[in-house]
Length: 258
Length: 305
Image (cartoon, rainbow over all chains, first blue to last red; front, side, top):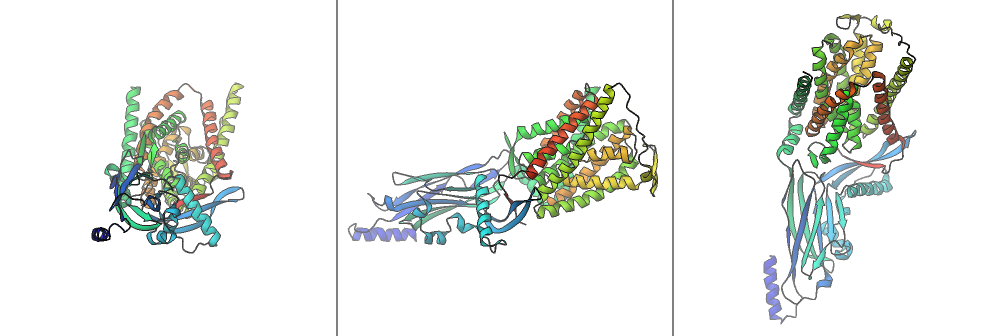
């Protein structure tokens, strides 16, 4: 469709003697489609890069164009708790269940987010973090809702799980763009979605999407699956390893003394 | 060098964890204690979730208890019958303890419960140990022999019904007190990720009136089965046993224990016990500070069930 549109636009432009506005597209790519969590996993970095393709040159549209890159991990419900002092001791008292929050969220743009994309387009394409946080009916009312959501965002930001980098994308020669996000070691498994939005005058005119599969592999996969699917045998194996190690230690100790 | 823990779902600094394991192993070799009461809080201080720290601590204790039992078994210093009575109580206690642990976890109160248990029990035991060994040191300094303690324990406890003969302990006494001690230790094992030796050994000497020669071997015998059972329950119920972490701790702990046992040869009993009491009280104090000090961040996150 897009290509047909482009051809039509091109044809129209030729017919009208170049009196028509330039058409822009975004061409994007990500550095990897798969992240394996194995023994030495310390996190990973994904690069999102690409170019703005135009149907003709020279262009004078750079001021109006913007790029927004978003990477989002699987959503999960989260409980946020707040400690209160009770008889001198700090105890978890209030809690709110946030029905859905992304386990990882990163966004970068060529400028401040809402100078790059309009609020209407944000609603349509669910770009900002607020669009991904769902808390239906906070127990403590509206104030609590705000406070607990803020706490969630703050804690996840400190862990490197929520990243917001307005102005974090540089356009090279008004054509090339590149950005990268660090995924910390405590990310959850699942499908992560990367999305590149090309905007003109804060309206989305084109987008590119890709998926990244994050999965434990090898021994880590085996151990995790065993602990969830066969907890009884997992426990037997854990105990057997401990007994074997205990026996070994005792024998080695005897050998030393003899 | 980082290593990824598949159950805790985070990566930790491998030399740090190995160092902790070796340190605690060394202390346990030095003092003849299991070290569970040290490893669990230390793991928590390094950022490992308390639920994983407690369950994995139990798994690690299986190894150190087994190695200890083998040594004492060869010296015939294990009262199997007494151990089984303690164990019967222990299994009941830890089964209840793991249920309680799961309920507290759902209510977001595990950290509090673990910390409170540590402060109360470590504080009490550490203080008693310190006072007593300081007293012993002063007495020995005055060159007066320590008065021999009546070894028979409280007679009304032994006179309860369900009397049994414990040959190795040279006792003919009721099975109820050791059973109750076992229950208490079982609950603690599940809640705190400890073997419970630090509670059980004094209870065996002062409440049950057992001779000191069989106390350590018998308590290790009970701890071996109790921690294995606790590991099983935590793995099945809470899925919080991290085998990767356990292996790191077991091997570094075994090496540390040998070093500790060698270091301990040249030191006197009272001095060792004072040192142990100071360490116990320090862990207790750190936990207590965390309970009462205003936290930098009052909010915390947990996966919603």
